[in-house]
Length: 96
Ligand SMILES: NC(=O)c1ccc[n+]([C@@H]2O[C@H](COP(=O)([O-])OP(=O)(O)OC[C@H]3O[C@@H](n4cnc5c(N)ncnc54)[C@H](O)[C@@H]3O)[C@@H](O)[C@H]2O)c1
Image (cartoon, rainbow, N blue to C red; front, side, top):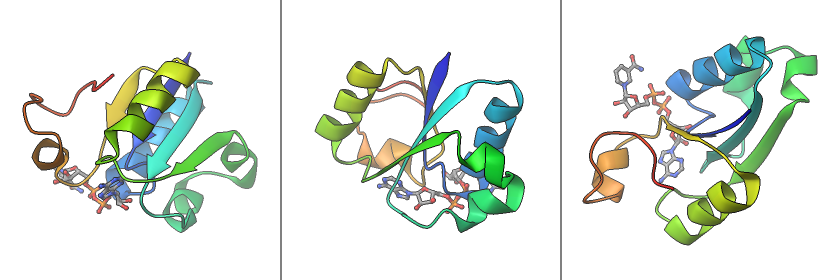
């Protein structure tokens, strides 16, 4: 299984990524922030090498949908204000 974690460089996102890696799940992150420092606080160098990083905004729905489609990801959102940038979506669930 592979999971796309938006906001994966953030506090909640980094811990979600770590939990997924611990369960041997492949992780794809998508975040505005290109800096993986926060993730590096919770994941080992070896674990970090298993993460596929993508940089961009969740507001770029074309990019997000393309990632979901091309990478076959279930989606897990941990971005700031996901609801406000995706009007009409209920909760912080799948946008695919
Ligand atoms: N930290 C908590 O204790 C806590 C508790 C309850 C709810 N939440 C909610 O969880 C969510 C995440 O919280 P957090 O503490 O991890 O925040 P955070 O600021 O540490 O992480 C948010 C991440 O989302 C990224 N991001 C922001 N806007 C983006 C965009 N448009 N596109 C892509 N990436 C974007 C940021 O770069 C950052 O890495 C927030 O909605 C917050 O309100 C947090």
